[in-house]
Structure formats: C-alpha cells, structure tokens
Length: 332
Image (cartoon, rainbow, N blue to C red; front, side, top):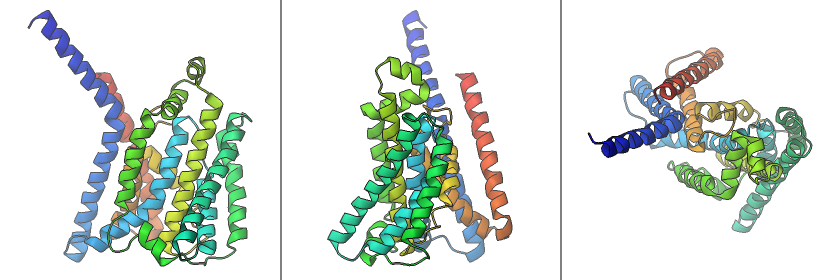
C-alpha cells in the first residue's frame, strides 16, 4: 500500500469514526424505537392474536404528538445548557385557551392557532430574558413561570371542559389514520434546516463553549432568548395538539409533560452539557415513551407499578447509551 493510499485510507476511516461518534446517540435512539415497536407488536399479537392495525398505530401517533412538540422545544433549550420546566404550564394554558375560545370556521381556528403560538413565544421570551439578561438559573426561572402559567390556565379553564372544533381535530389528530406522521416529517426537515442556519449554529456554539462563541461574535444573550422563544412556541403547539387529541381542555393535563419532555430528550441523546444532539433523536425518544406505556399494558404490568418500570427503563437506557458512547469514543 503506497503512502498516498494509506493516507486516503486513514482519512476515510477517520471520517467514518467521527461520523459514528457524532451519530451514536441518534442511532441508539432509533434502535430503541425499533426495539420498542417490535416488543409492542409481539405483546399485542400474544394478547389478541393479530397485529396492530390502523386504529392502534393512529392512537400511538396521535398520543405521541403533544410530547413530540414539547420535547423538541425542550431540546433547543437543553442544547444551550439550559432547561425549561415551564413546558407543562404553557401546555396547560394553551390547550385551555384553544378549548374555550376556538370555534368552528377556518378564520377562528387559524386566528386562535396563531395567537396561541404567539402566547407561547411570549412566555418563552420571558424565560429567555430572565435567564440571559437577568443572569438567573434556568431551573429557578422556569420553575417560577411554570407556576405562573398553571395559575393562568386555571383562570382560563377552572375545570375540565370546553370543546375543540371537529375540523380542527381532523386536521391535527385525524382518527382515521396516522397522518400526524406528516408533522413528524416536517419537524425533521425543519431541524435539518435549523442546524444550517446562522441561528442554529449559534445555539450549538453557545452550548459547546459560551465564552468562545462570544469571542467569535455570537450574540449570546439574544440567541438564548431566541432559543427559549422557540421552546415556548413548541410547547404551545403541543397544547394545540393535546386539545385536538382530547377534543377538550384541562388546566392540569400538561403537567405530565414537564418530566416526560426531559425524558424524551435524554433518550434522544441530547447532551445536558450542551452543544450536542439531534431533535430527530428526541422525536424517537418521545415515541419510545409512548410505546413503553402500551408495552407495559400488554405485558399485564399492574398500573400501580408502571411508573417504577418506566423509571427503571429510563435509567437502563441512559446507562447503556453512556456506555456505548464511551466505547465508541475510545475506539475513535
């Protein structure tokens, strides 16, 4: 082998190793999703002697969509080394607003959808300004705004009720087929575009090294605010999907998404040290968590112990992911 050939061989191997190291968390998330889906199919067939059909897969997709949006918004903030605990409160508020104020008709549905997204962006801006300009810890800021949003949600909808137009439900959470996957494709495409924009590059630069990013001209504070604004808008979108899926509103229904959005981020391979990860992995993590609930049900696990097994699965998945990344890194 000539020296030129050897150089090309080592260069190509180095590129492959770099790609493997960088993509390991995403690949692991996709493998977990495939494994969980296979387990769900197997247990479903054992119980009912048939494979999951259109109704079952549609239910999985529609149930997953609010978590998908909430978790993607969480991912953007986590990449900057932040955290958004106000996700649940914003979902409470926005799904309540949709259920109480949205009426049939394209004009009303479109207007309230845009208004809800703007409210989500405004809530995110408050978080971002307090974190970036107030120099407060993200966990303290978003814990406080979580309570504020929850209080506003109860004011809007004191008790479960309201109604979402049937046309709106058919558009966002069509019960006749898993059309929600179209939104998953849009999220994946939007993320790929986001990663190549100046703003996206700046978000990851801040997560990798904030001081170095500032030295290279990145507007750190403005970028952080923008990240929280996007997170708030994604949380608001999650509230709209939740309202469409349940066809009504509930001022406490979003609370569960505080922890599950973080869990989806963890399963998706987003680094809490910032600057690494893909929202595509987070989407896979969201579907894994939804399928896990179905798996536990068809495995005849007592509902009282389902939280225990969910937590156990999350711990094992995180430890396995960490081990694999270290092994890949050592070989690289």
